[in-house]
Image 1 (tube, helix red, strand yellow):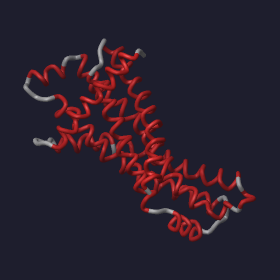
Image 2 (spheres, rainbow, N blue to C red):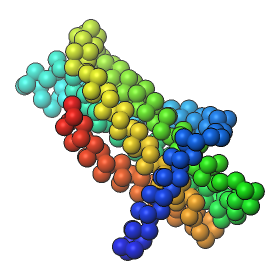
Image 3 (cartoon, one colour):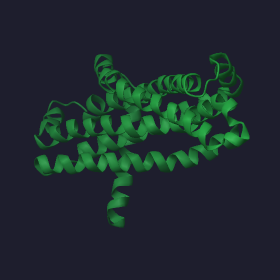
Image 4 (cartoon, rainbow, N blue to C red):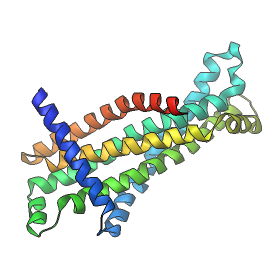
Length: 250
């Protein structure tokens, strides 16, 4: 990828961001379309998000207990699982797994509309494609990804509880008390704040690639692949900087 294409992509994403957020905060709003997108993005991604975080919590509990037995970490499993999930693993894993699914879907949908000239038809009817097509997807992603992250964190902590009780022979009360003592509002806020940023990156990259797809079915396939790769990179890179920011202000 050349420097010129990188700059063109960055500029296109910036312009689409401005137009998308303007459409979000100015009427008219198509709430029916927002609800439809929320169902597509949130409800239909619930299963994969919960399975991912449940087993991540279980693996965390096992690895912590088996790797550091001499330090007595076994009795602080709740602290390790809850803080790791809420601050880092929950938001990042949900964004990568769910983001790959919804990002590819949004790009494929918009890309197909682009190559079949349906977006040109929307413009011909004096409608704004960003308001009609991009804004609902952006709003739904910004709302549903943090919700999925919160639910995933809860299920991941319960997955750690199952392992703590079933495999490590700890009492449920000891595990849950450790979670409640260790977990703070700043931990939860950090994870939810990251989810908003990750959701923005996923939605805006997916919509941009879909709206700029060219070359028929092959072009839509390339745009979908680019969305998954670029969105995943942006999630991982931004996670580093967001972690530093949240630690500085907490």
